[in-house]
Amino acid sequence: MPTFRPNIEAMQPYVPGEQPPAGAKVIKLNTNENPYPPSPNVAAAIQAELANGGDRLRLYPDPKATALRQAAAEVYGFPVEQVLHGNGSDELLAMLFRAFVGEGQTIAYPYPTYVLYETLAHAQAARALVFDFDRDFNLPRELFGCGARLVLVASPNSPSGTVYSSRQLRELAASLGDGVLVVDEAYAEFADSNSLALARELGNVIVLRTFSKSHSLAGMRLGLLFASARVVEGLGKVKDSYNLDRLSIVAGAAALRDVAWTAQNTRRVRGTRERLSRALAELKLDVVPSQSNFIFARMKDPPTAAGAYRFLKDRGILIRYFPARLLDDGLRISVGTDAETDALLAALKEYLARG
Image (tube, rainbow, N blue to C red; front, top):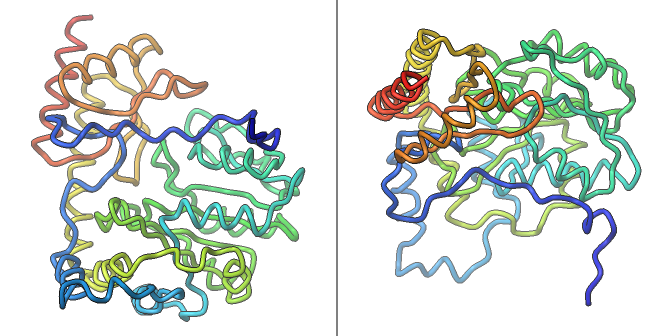
């Protein structure tokens, strides 16, 4: 029988949120997808790429995804040589681990946060320093000067939706010596601030973005990385040659350039987020202030939260419940359309009324 490396044998795989089968009649508020469609320019760009019976598909895509990176450079104000593309920000994270972290070397991150960090650490046989957030999800002071090769901070954090200021992150980056600070901004378009300026200024700060949330392209698997030209060049050595296909490249470029469409959808989500947050607070849930497209709300105890998850699922409403330390008394709820939000709140009120 084949034998895996010991760390692979021992590790648990990353488990994504539940994906219902095609055609299932559910309200899906468990994986933080955007409830609104992408820019119409995306479909037009894909259709143009498929012209002449899809003849271009017989050719390899641009390994440098130049059209996508140029669009990102224009929209975000970065030199194109400081932008890298990935098959979702997950692939970019994997590239960072491969490039910076060897067996037995150290990474660090706060807990609870995006669980893929732990999975990638195990895959590299790296040592993880994990420091607990407090109840309000303030950035743990133990991260500062921790000596790790990579320090990962999701801002906005998942599952809390909390954002960390440029001042805090600048201080953290300065404390790391030769270490690298990765600011994972998967949800940044829904927040009041971001850390792109730090990636322009500081050689040891890397910022990640994804198209899955604000650009409504979770099905295309697209991500961007912003860092110094030296970091981007080094990461290119561990990148798969053709990690984005032709359709993804043109779709991403079209989505980026339609700034008005993204802003419109983002405003709609933020508006519903505030309404949902107020309604959950009125139901006596402890709502963590969110700057993302989801809300984390605590209930009175873990059995009540787990019961709410099951009750909602039985009624065709999927949310995320984490049966884990510091999370098992709460629910993470993606912001859906207004109609989906109304259905969620009605079902949650019914559950709570049962005592």
